[in-house]
Image (cartoon, rainbow, N blue to C red):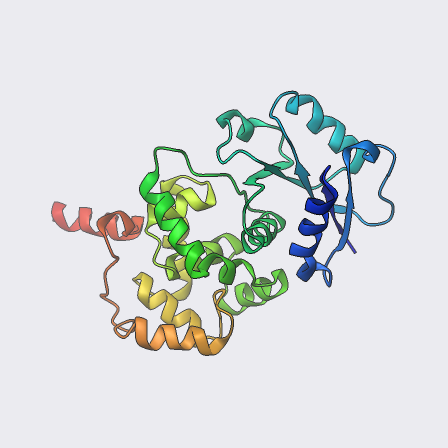
Length: 273
């Protein structure tokens, strides 16, 4: 069984982080330590899937990360700090650094961030100038949407990918589209370009044989995918009541930015004719 390593100098905070991630005990071994003994304790047996590293300053981070990697060999590292914002250069750190979170984040967000990184994603704050996107994400967090999405176990994600015949990345795009995210916000959330997001969306639509966001969500739920909702009842309720016109293949996206590349090519071709 793989492990989740927690490095936090304050005993109470360390205990709190362990408690916040307790739901992962069935899948991972939770281990914690402080800086004083970080190089004395060498984890044995369990491979370190993610290391939650609490830092008090960004100084000397370039030297600390290699030392941490040497001690634990983590697949990924999630940084915790008191600062609400982080220097942009943090995202240029070595590959294991896959996320950053303010230490005062609520337990649900910490757990969601850890699950996202474990799934192979990245978890960095949005740029400061993207205020509208940030407000929208904050609204999702308040409503519990992010927790609902990320609480889906990795095994369930694999099963639903197989049911739908889509890749894990296409599934991530579908889950966010189902939450009403426009293409631009999906790209920001997944840290990929808008063009790449549209390409994934186009491929997703082709695999599901649909032409719109609503139809894709409806078909996915109809096939038995929960798309991160707590249960199938919630998913079906959403599909039946929030998406009443989902079966209409002509149902449009919410705005022009959401139209996939395939639809743009069709429009361009019709103009030429």
